[in-house]
Length: 157
Image 1 (cartoon, rainbow, N blue to C red):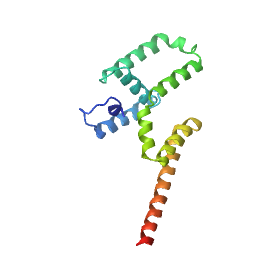
Image 2: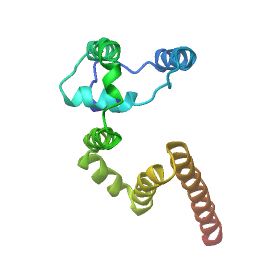
Image 3: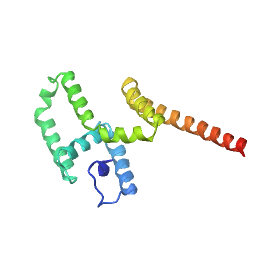
Image 4: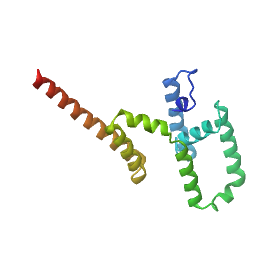
């Protein structure tokens, strides 16, 4: 995702390296009372939109957050949740690309409706329920459609 956002064609995607890193995060983050992968996509997208071109931006943010947590932790509880929610909505809206929505719309009504369904279901339920239900609907409908096409071909032949 980050390579596509940053239009990075130089570095090929290495799934082994990616899965190894994600595995390490899944193992070690809970040991320090953290939530693995929470918000990583939003932070990456925000960094890229701000002009980051190397992973150094992520390292800088990590150090900055540690320093802020150490020195400002006592004041964090004073921040209203509504402010944090507003920041999260702003960050999420920055990840929406009109060109990608148009691209999905050109694929067909079904694909576009699945995108809208997922976008509505994730906030209404939760991430896992919204995405999994969309995937299940997509594959069930696609398989039914393929079977109907095969049956039509058999009848016409």
